[in-house]
Image (cartoon, rainbow, N blue to C red):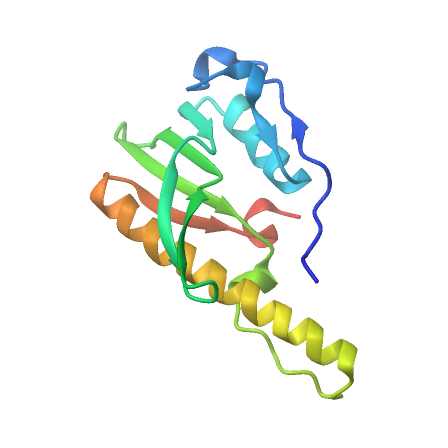
Length: 152
C-alpha cells in the first residue's frame, strides 16, 4: 500500500546559470517541488541551487538496511545582511512530518492506512536524522518545507 505520487517530470529553468548540475536533467516529483524550484530560479537572492544532487546514506529501521536519501534541494541564499547561507531543503506534506494519529474506527482499511502512515513517518524520521547530521558536517542548514511555508 505504497503512496503514489504523480509521474516525475522535467523542469526547465529560466536562469540555467544559477543551477548547479545538468540543467537538462532537473526532475520534479511533485507540483510543490516545482513551486519551490520556480522560487529558486526566479528569486534574485538565490545565487545557486540544485535538485537531488547528493545521496545521503541512512539506516532504514523498518527494512533494517542502509539506503540512499536524495535531499530535494540545495540552495545558496544571499541574506539581507549580505551573508550567505547554505540550505538543504526537503519538501513534504505537513501530515508526513507529524506522528500518525491512530484511527478512531478499527476497520481493516483504517488499520492498514495507519500502519502505512507509521512506516512513512518512521522512514522520514530516519532520513531526516541522517540529513541533519550530513548538513551539520557540510555547513548546511537542513529545512523541511511544507504547504504552510510554500503558501499552498
